[in-house]
Image (cartoon, rainbow, N blue to C red; front, side, top):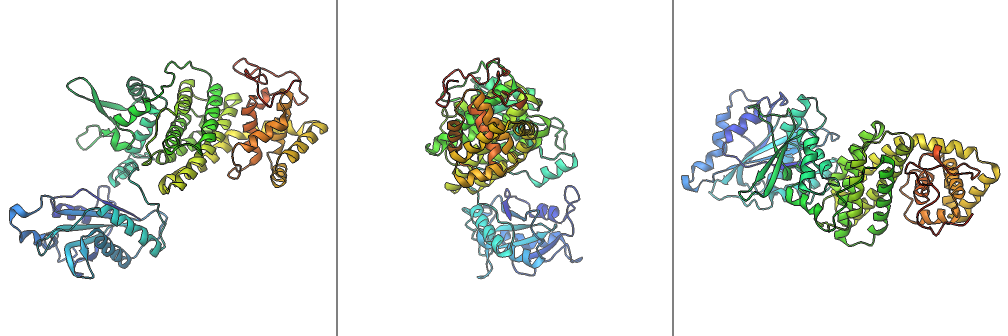
Length: 566
């Protein structure tokens, strides 16, 4: 249940015409009263003798008792209360009870005491009502509306439980502004899945990802095709910006511009500039292939994850915000078969990237560099090494998003935790799509291993990992791919037993859909093995082909503690 207090108005009659009218897209059906301050207000929707003027005069009657200079300039209070798409339809009686509870919670009226402002509740759709009130009581006093929004939200949480509705998480005031009903209807008319506000928010976030200057940020917006206006002080300093979608116009045919702060609290120009504070990332990024960029991003994500638990709150918040940039960059450069789910993951995680914990910028340098590398490496083709490394980086970002969900949960950030969990589900789906081909090839190679080699990998898993976990892995469909990867690590000159123990201990595995799949990507990243199994070392340990960077896959530039002499 979502209550929303709208801007106060000056014309009761104007709002009545809207509530009882057809709506902006003929969406209003059977408008009628479900409750009022005295249980007997005239209803122009059901009573042919009642008129809008009669109802307006009754509502505004307390205003006539005041001297003109005592009347509030904006006396019309307007609250809409909407249920979710999965909630059952409430009866008129139930909606009437909701209205009475809401006006009491807000401080508009106290039905039990019979004292308060005059108000009516109008229903013109199955899923919501509108409450209109006059902000003057009959004795001339005005209601105390301090924190009315907080009080009606709290009442909504109680009503959800009592009425058996979907229970929403309480907010903390850091969420982006929701699209209005008019914006949603406009998007539907134009055949768009998202409103202009939501599309612009996504575009601006992608322009921020890894950017290091105002010029670069605005150049990216221009390249994305949005209309941009800037606000400049007399001194020449840039004060702010607004953006609009081409073709999104108002009744006068003019583009509808949105300030960055109205797209998201962190998208105002001053907040965007905070990304560029602290240690700066490398602006002169040398473009590399998508596979190399995804490998580096995977490493940066894992390093961030390993320090998240022990980090100060400000540092953790910076990592989470920067993870959002990596997701935005990954969605922007993803191949067609993963693009939709990655875009949905980034869209959901946007809510998780903000809280009242202020990010300490500078600590997020490696993740912001990863986002920048992804942007400048160009789009992935979805096959070969860049397709396989996409699965690798999705696996890494999934676990960082899961850590972010746990962190928000500990801080009682309910909406952020739920958003991170939703993003993780989209990442699961994206990983399945990205990993299907490379994991299939690895599985074929694993099943072709000579029996002594395969048996060695079975014993290695059973000796290294806890018994229950080892047996679970050996029973999974991904076991053959893991066996091939362990053989590849051996062929590359690693102590595969020590390597397996290391990667298994680095982070929890309980949230993994397939533990063997997770260990495959951890091992291939840690051992610097080609993610594309077709370029990997052969099962018998013969010569290792070069990866796309020209460096031998099994020959890291720095020695690893798991490395042994062949």
